[in-house]
Structure formats: C-alpha cells, structure tokens
Figure (cartoon, helix red, strand yellow):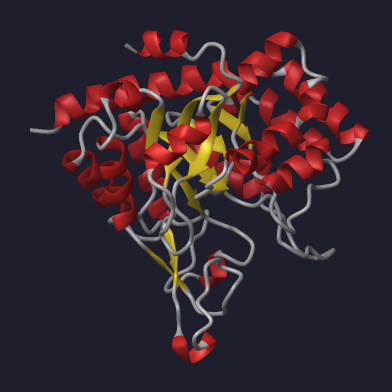
Length: 336
Ligand SMILES: [Zn+2]
C-alpha cells in the first residue's frame, strides 16, 4: 500500500517533513483543505498541531486577541488536546488519502516525567495513526520562557524518558532546539555541546533536528557549516537528521551565494541526512504554502540530482515508512 502511494505521487515536487495544521490558538483549515493545497505538488506530509496555546489574557491585552506567541506577553500553556484533534482530522480521511499524511504527537510537556504516559495514551486511543513525536521544543527564542511552569531543559531526565521511549517504539523524533541564544554575548554559551550530548545518549532513537538549529533571531554560528559537518561525520550521531524547514532558515541558506554553495556542498557530501519541510502553519493558500520551496531554488540548483531527490522526497519516504512500520509493530504487541 505504501509503495502504491509512493509510486502514485512520484511526479510530485517534494514531501513536506514539517507542517503544523493548527496555529498558536489551535485554529487551522481542515486536513482535507490541506490535501487540496498539496495537490500534485506535495506527495506526503508530516502533520502535527501546535503543542502550545497562547493565552488571551484580558488583563494584558484587553480586547486585542493574540494569535501568535509574539502578539502578547501572556503565557503559553501545553495543550494536549492537539493530539486528539490531529488524530480525528486524520481519521476523517479515506484510506487512500491517509497514505499521504504522517501524523506526529506533540501535546506533551517535556519537563513532565509523565510525558511518556501521555504519548502511550495517545497511541492506545488512536492506534494506526501516529508515526512520530514532534515538533516539540526544548530551547526556543521567546517561546521557552513564555511557557507556564518549569522551563524545558536538555538536562531534564523527562526528556531522556521521552527519547528512550522513542527508541523503543520507533517513533520518529522531530525536535526543535536553538543552536544558540537569541542575542549571544562573548560570555554566553551556545547549545552545541549539550545538544550533541543528548543526541549521543539516545542513539536508538531516529531524531530530526529541526531548522538545523536556527531561529527567527538565532543566527547561524560563525562556523555553522563546519559544526554540522562535524556532526555528520560523527559515527555516534548517524541516527541524527537535519530539516531544512522554516522561512527563516531558507533566508539564511538561500540568501547569498556563499552559504548556498557551502550548504549544497555539505548536502551533496551527506545526501541521506537532510529533509526538506515547509514549517508552515495553518496555511490557507497554495501559493503561500509552496513559497519556501521556491525560495530554496539557489540551493536546489546546486545539488546533484541524486542529493536533490533525496532531500526533497526519498529521505522522507525512507524515514517515515521505517518509523511507521515499527510503531505499528509496537502497537500490535503492546495495545490490548
Ligand atoms: Zn515548526
């Protein structure tokens, strides 16, 4: 069946490894509308909601209702219903349509030792639906510090439990962690060492590092490409993949010839380790949905045909199909 769908959409331009069906106030078009936007351009799509909800605090913004996390100083809170919503959207599709989506679980609080119980509960209640976990966030500029309660950290054993469980079940992991602080000073430390340690500790999980660590204001490190290269060459990190998603990342990679060339050389040398994704959120028009894909043209044209095919489609197919197979097996053995 999977081969059937992979063949069926062989002529599409790409698979989207990173798409949020809902926004920070948990709104977004129906999944069937998204299927229309995918049309004959996007074959398959890794779909998930938003694990965080922006509070509308009347005391802070009055009648000015925030829609995005930067719209208000009011806190964000974990919104676990997002997983049920995504599952119900997926289940409303026909069997054939379902083959084009790979839903991920992300409505858990990553400082909570019970997070794994939430993930298990979602798998138990919606067997046959989910392929992975994510996008979930540890350090993210302006977001982490706005979340109510304890702040997420790469040192937290709750994160270890989540990644360990992903290793046991085969759930593909899509993790956001900025590579650096938003406005680094000479005396601040970046997250390279910590994130490498976490990844190395969890070699049984297949992990995609979202946005190669970049953010809206988190700029690439001076030796960004060399740092990625070191990670790609490290045998203990062969289970780590990198997503080229988010318009902010496209601006960096495709923004000038030097970085486009540098990244293209890196990807050509390690073509199995990168995936393209849009990181669009609750988008309603196809033009907006595909914008980032076309922004990457300066990169696409510098890739070898083999690398280009892998980044746009084949790596997605391989990773998501593998994960799907393992998770279905785990469900069969563990859900009574
Ligand atoms: Zn995202």
